[in-house]
Image (cartoon, rainbow, N blue to C red):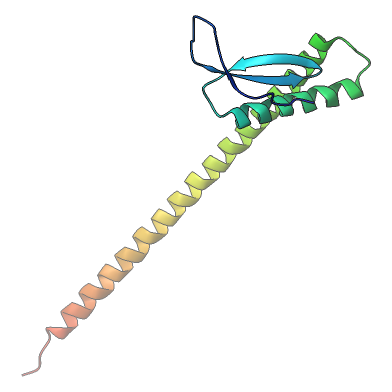
Length: 127
């Protein structure tokens, strides 16, 4: 199970001062350099760890590289499905917005015509 061991400061010359977050994924310790939110990085590591464990429990392979590749494929599949779903929702929203704009335009035209007719009637006088 992944866990945070606490952010520390990197001593690397290529990114001095960048915090390092220590996480465990699939029984391996990784030091992740990130100037982002350490809690978020930890959550990502936990997500990857869970996915790898789900994959390994359903397969016969014990090779961690193969488990990681299968987990990556599952995550990529989920990402692409969600992207397609998001695109479909965007398209539906755009269509609905267009329909609403058309209805509003028609309503405003009817209102303008009605106001013009009312204004035209008030100028009629009998002598």
